[in-house]
Image 1: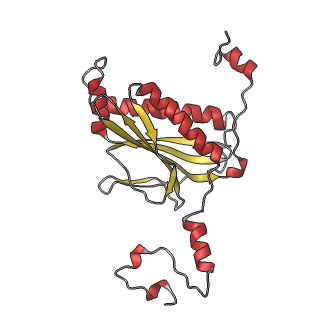
Image 2 (image 1 turned 180 degrees about the vertical axis):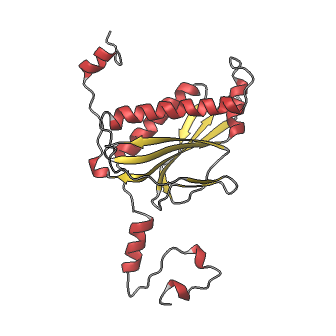
Image 3 (image 1 turned 135 degrees about the vertical axis):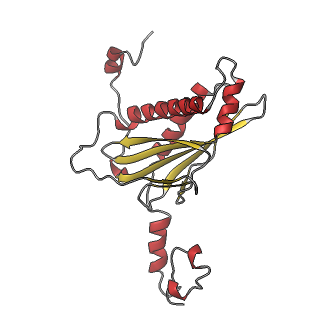
Length: 228
């Protein structure tokens, strides 16, 4: 075989690239494009897990939180019935954070909380929105600060969501950084799965990534930090 056209048409869709042992450049190109097309700094990946755990613990205090090893995905599939999207805008990245979960699992959690009224889908939306805002706020304070991108000449691409096929496209083939969190109520045995994706589809320059160094005096003055 000398090209993808030589592969049987019935199985061609299962392959993304073609190479021969006599010409390895095709393999190198495929690895760069489909596996290592984006590099995520370790400090960013670790920080996202830490911030998300804090946000989840504030909402699910009685649950044990476990997260799997972060990974990258090329698929565009949506997990569950409800998801949130929030833009991430900085001088080194532009894209979105997405949280995905199952509605029934969240409803079970809300029903077990006797302090809450009888919940419905609006309460599910509210809880997911609150978690999204908490994580976004910590992400902004830690990694963005006041270094917002300029608005002149910014590129935008349409987001396509196909509910029937549980598919969402952000207009790029770049892999997405994915985290899976499992929240378990040890008393009842019920659990909630929450998928978190970071899609840097508009701008991605990780060499400019850095954590924001906050001045302690300014935090005290603004009331964000209290000293005792």
